[in-house]
Length: 415
Image (cartoon, rainbow, N blue to C red; front, top):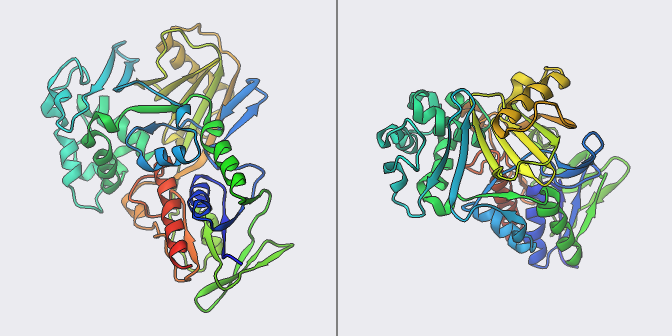
């Protein structure tokens, strides 16, 4: 009988590992503790707004090679929409200014030398801090390397790093900031084209993956929570699901693709990030204005990004811990005031839903980044996956998928 790989967790890390292994003909069994796949990247019908919404808003870029390969492998790349070139519209709620950041395709950043393409009130020289971040020694915080002030910081560098790292940028790990810049701005506009799952995260990233796994004979078990690992010597011998134990044959392997706090409870002595940052999302059932861009950056407001979908506007606020204890109706009205100002829609609050993810990502500080484990473990048939593992990237879709691919390669090499 062919060896079996048990993948614990049906988020993007687990699904990407399952796809890679099933493509090789490996027998795969996915165990998911909840009733749904996708983890933070899921869609569901919400009664408050009377429509399907995403748990959170997630942006991909044209340079996210692992994520795009994943989508191609499940036949869902066409579900992404975005401009033909790297364009990012912004509005400053304090001044009323609107502009569009337009990156040129080539590696040479010619956009820096064109005032119509860069943020207003900035000069090409103002973007030198981006180079400083690329050259900085790992282990430092962003605020130790650059001055987090000035027009270029407030109008581009700060919003970029806040969205990518989900932390107040001065506290963020310069290693992760450099990785983001290296794979986006430094790679030229071809790598920076924004791509949005217009049909929803579930329809784009999750449902097609489950369908492809089913085609390949993979087993996906929902409501199947792992309670413990039974280990002996240098390998995992069995998976304990409470009312059921699954014994592992000699060639079987396990990929643990669960959140870091769950992994730490299952793997003795595993060091994982211990601090987290929240993300606050808001969804409003209202038809966006005809000229509303798919994504709009907002400065000097509570809101940071507004996403337009058919019949719905959605908002993302990174590092949203300060808003976790705000009354939901007060928060909805505060957010909608920003949205109405940015879009010209009426001030009356439409049907809404607030989604607060308290532990959305690990805190991307140098100290917490240093606690991220690699994919390999001391047990030869156990690998780790998740955006919290040491991918070299912040906690992103791209990082999650890369981690799953890496874990799949590790266990495949052991067969």
